[in-house]
Image (cartoon, rainbow, N blue to C red; front, side, top):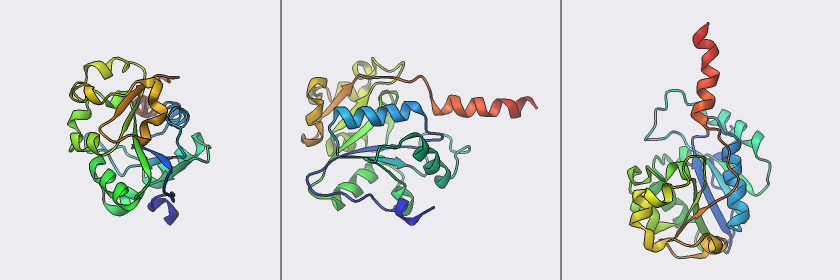
Length: 207
């Protein structure tokens, strides 16, 4: 794997940059739609597609290696504003809160926003230091199938209801002082990494 993927992408002060992290095991059209929606609706200069070493809340036994997941990701997204990176592995960062602290301390003057699919919203309160995350960086929650109502019922949505930004104003989200978050509707794909992995395993299990 080229060493460049183990470094943070280059940014300049004044940029609006989205951080979109995940295992991407494998990446699929749903991830690509989230990235495209974030770039357009949030008016981002860049979106960092952060391939994580693993997910502390999930079983990582079937996790493909980082180089493979980077290669997969590059094949499904070609927008030059999307920067693929695995810097968390080089810095031994396990949790999103650690990543956000690392990124913001080293990129003064850059406006970051955390981007995530709505399927993560229901369990967001189980993330390590989740309230720190919400108070450190604006959050854009992008709609995913079966998760549209999560912004009403989730612990995160209820706790930070006062900080919710109307979707019509989402273009300014990256420039707002946290806590600030919004729910963005848009095209949705029914694909999921889990379903894709299971479908790939089925032939082997039958043989």
